[in-house]
Amino acid sequence: MSGATPTQDPGSLRDLDAASEPADGSGGAPRGLSRRGLLALSGGLGLTVGALAGGTAAALSRPSVADGAGLAYPFFGEHQAGITTPAQDRLHFAAFTMRAGATRDDLIELLQDWTYAASRLTQGQDVSPHGAFDGGPYLPPDDTGEAADLGPSGLSITFGFGRTLFVTAEGTDRFGLAAQLPPDFTTLPTMVNDFIQPARSGGDLCIQACANDPQVAVHAIRNLTRIAIGRATLSWSQLGFGRTSSTSTSQQTPRNLFGQKDGTNNLKAEEPERLAEHVWISEGPSWSHGGSYLIARRIAMTIEVWDGLQLTEQDRVLGRAKGSGAPLSGGTEFTAPDFTKAGTDGAPLIDPRSHVARTNPANNGGIAMLRRGYNFVDGNDDQGRLDAGLFFIGFVKAPARFAAVHTNMARDDMFVEYLKTTSSSVFLVPPGVAADGYVGQALFAS
Ligand code: HEM
Image 1 (cartoon, rainbow, N blue to C red):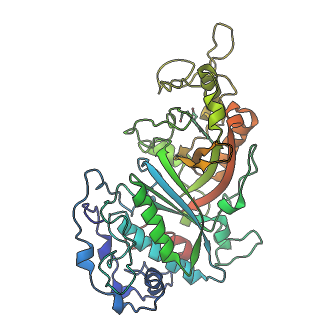
Image 2: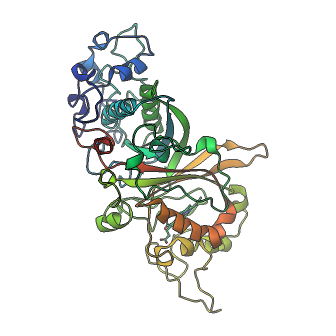
Image 3: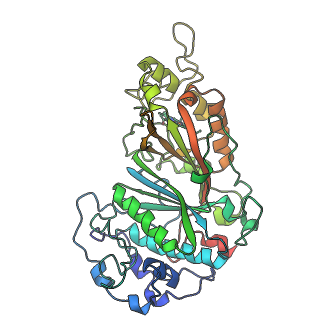
């Protein structure tokens, strides 16, 4: 995975000499994987750090990768990547549960190890300097190897904290974090057409891996899951393809599985003032400022029913023309919808029960969100209907804002008839990581 020109050299940030530093959470991150992170990668063979040394140069000098695969986004920065980063084409989303009995130090150490590994993976490097092929013939390789020749492929890795990390449903404060729970960190109310499956909802931690190559995204989740062994386990995950939103004006609006242009009126990276107003957390405990709330909802779409609707009805349900994406009140794709404009029959050209009318900021007290979802097809049922839909991901300043728009949508949106939500989660994505720090560091220093 090392053919791309990295935009930074994360390998130099931590090294194996520091791998046994204690995880006290006060200083920066150790400059390498912890002893337990290395043990997890070695299959728990009880190897010493010294036994794993060597091979660094070889691991970092693989052949160059195909054109386009070399795109690398910085891991460190003011905000985590994967929010305003131009939406990549592929998603692997994963939620984790901390092991029973895990301590605060275990959690900190895991976040440090994940930071180190993510800073390498996003630059097209193997998960540790020992790589997939260079750790020695008698050891399981540190890196699983399936992305070895693929380059960073625009990989972003975004970490989030579930509410249960602060306090469990039973009220237990496992990690001494309850006092740091932001008052805004609320759960979502049950919505119309919710058929939530607890086994694929929630979690103590989440990782959103997005890339332009599916194998790069899967490789990231797979290797971060291996590192977590003994501290956290993968509880559920979701693959996605075909971004359903634009998060940058440089991107063409993609289409979702209903064939509609999706992401036209989305918040975009080029609007810093609107992002500050709607996306970045600025209230509650200071450790969370600059972060955002990630809402993830797996929404099954009744594809076969939709496919039988007349085009006029498909357009009426959305409020936009399927072909051009223009609002039914007229103009082109990016013309603002006019909800007051009436047709010759005196009725509004955009039906007040259309999806656009129900979710537009003008009809929701000005609330906007940054949508960053992906299509999914998870096979089919025994009637031959696709288990397909949208893995909705939205970033908001507070979950209550999403709930307000969603409640307005659920109340009367004609779209809801064609949707069924099977998974629902809220995670707090902490702010970006300093070059000598680790994900969520300020939380543990509070
Ligand atoms: C499978 C489910 C969904 C599909 C297929 C879908 C599709 C679309 C499409 C095609 C548009 C118009 C183009 C655009 O401006 O992006 C749109 C707009 C929008 N959707 Fe959805 N959507 C879904 C669920 C949701 C949910 C759950 C929410 C959150 C409450 C939501 C919030 C929005 C918002 C805020 C807009 C922009 C409206 C505007 O400002 O004009 N959508 N959606």
